[in-house]
Length: 157
Length: 177
View 1 (cartoon, rainbow over the protein chains, first blue to last red):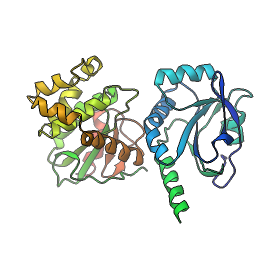
View 2: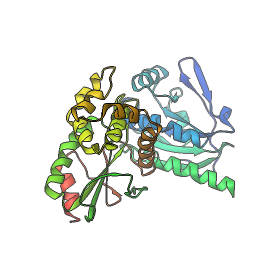
View 3: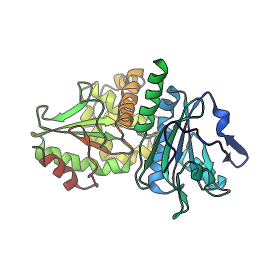
View 4: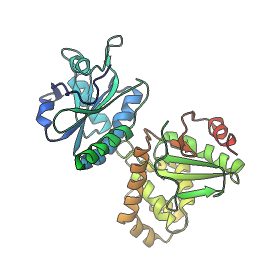
């Protein structure tokens, strides 16, 4: 089962580019959307990442950044990002393979890929929403935006 | 099942019978080949069921993948201000390939073909309102769970059975009329 609302998001440090690593805990004070997905280049994922690329402005409105995560290597991610003109980081859960995906309960042992799972993490590093989508279905962005909106409402009250 | 969050309203481009029992909403991208495939299917649907259904088109441009999607969407909106939204909508989908070869004059050749007031068209195409209309459509689509184009809703419910065939659209409409 994937990690659920209320659980702390396990910290990690992964390559975002061949020479740059990103550490989750460096994003305290911001909201972070983690989008685990099976693989670069496969059609559904591509649509999902292309969709998030267009939705960045809406995520930013809620003080959120988004990162994609798959077991593909940093070089594969770089080529994929350039090809699809993506404007957000793709993290390489490459070595040890799938270790971050496993920590979030989003690893498919059989296929050796991440599941298609979404996590919305608050400013303090606590998971506020998570969702496991069937691997072949692009989950869209409505669940993420609903969760972010709900977090705004909760803060106001 | 995903629901349409923004009900059909007076800002929408609508065609068919406003009092019909079946209301089909499409979230579409003018440069998306799959929307290009859907276009003649919808034309046929409207020809056969036009008096029993209402069709609404909303913009959902995937801009990085389709560099001309936004300017095309704005052009259709701008043509709408001259009463020719559907004419421009059809013209673009029927000449989708041309979107890959736009010159410096952008969408002006399309406007000329429709005999639009060119000065007004250019002015409107650059206006903030037209840009916001397209962006608002997109945001409403995202919030309704649109995850790619074309994204169809029939009477407010996401149409998951669409498979790029005429039958999959017609079945959804026939069930309601």
